[in-house]
Length: 103
Image (cartoon, rainbow, N blue to C red):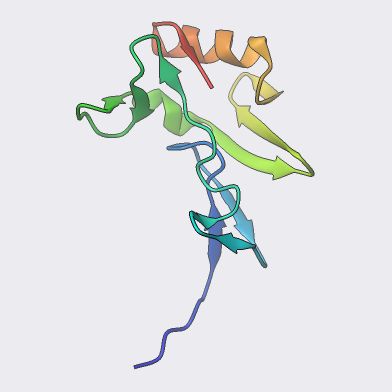
């Protein structure tokens, strides 16, 4: 049995749209830069499309995409584009989700 890679995708922020790659470094965690960030609420739950003890369903997160740009991660959504760590991004996501969140 042989395996063939037909596409590479990385998701820098969990549950947001990701990026197509031509090549990527692999480490012990998997694809370098994959899911290094997540949208987290004040109770420590992560925004996701599912609801579990660790995750809270926030379908609004699907309106955003993330991609790496040199050593930074950029998030794009209906309201604009921000670098991860920008307080305006956290404020926008908090407003969209109806509760305080941060990346």
